[in-house]
Image 1 (cartoon, rainbow, N blue to C red):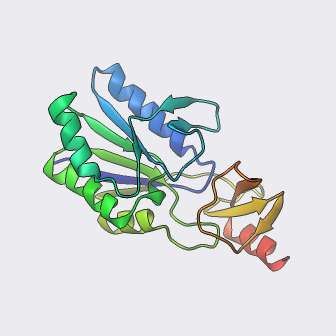
Image 2 (image 1 turned 90 degrees about the horizontal axis):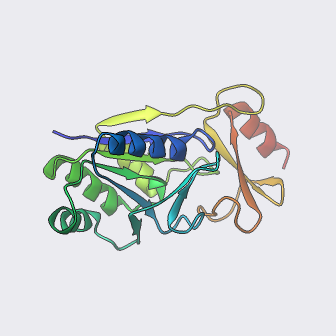
Length: 195
C-alpha cells in the first residue's frame, strides 16, 4: 500500500528544492510524477520556485473547490499512469483536499508526498497541515537554522523589514513587502516582546 507523507519545516528549510529533487529522481527512472500546488500560493504563478533559483511548472494548480481525487483519476484514465504525486505549499489546502490526498494514497495506491509549513507566523496551525498531522502515514521534519545558530522551528513575518505578529494568516513571501524569516523559539519571543 502506498503512503501519504508530510515533510514540514520552517521557511528556508529546502522543501521546494527537495520536492523538485524527488521529482527528478522518479523521472530519471522513467516514472511519471504529478506536481501540485494550491493557487493560493501566488509566488511563481503556475511554477514551483525554490530560493536556490530552481523552478518548475506544476501540472495542477489546485483551486480551493477542486476535488484532487477526481482530478488524479482523470489523469490516470486520459494521460498516463501516475507513479507519485508531489504537493508543495500543502498548508494552503483544505481539510477535504488533504482527505482526498489520503484517499489517493490508500485507494489508488499512489504515493503522495506533501511539503509545507506546520504553523503560521502567529504559531497557529494551517488547515491543511493540521489535517496532515492527523492522517499522514509518515511525518518528517526538514530542518533549518535561525540566525542565532539554533534550530529554527517558527516563521517570523516581516512587513517592510519589521516583524509583525498580527494579521491575516496568509500573506505570500515577497509580495506586498512581506518577507519571512526562520526563527528558533528564543528569537521569536525576543522579537515579539520588543514590539
